[in-house]
Length: 138
Image (cartoon, rainbow, N blue to C red):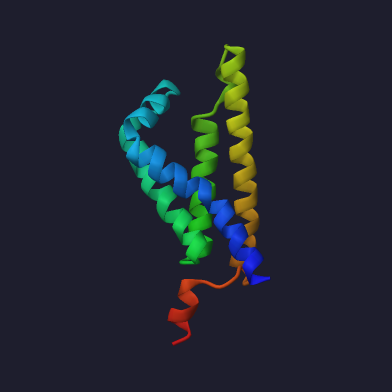
């Protein structure tokens, strides 16, 4: 069962590792331009900060380093992003509204999955092996 849980953790984290590194850090200007268009102040700085947080949180979930805190941080980020960036209810263009609504719902779904993982981890449930298990068993 550990293999299934690890695969689930990796799949959950891929969007954060990928978007954090490729979109928010390596293509910070383009991502910041989109964020600024959506009303985010200090868009480039916040894009870079969120990229580092997404990357660290995603890696933390994958390898199990402070998994509960890592996933909780990703949940908080995802909810902030949903309401602050993907506010489809303010859009007037039908295509933009549809795209932003899809992004908003995707973020809510990711946050929901993260909350489930957080609840399991925080209650001492089995979330699979973690790098920290080796450190604390010495």
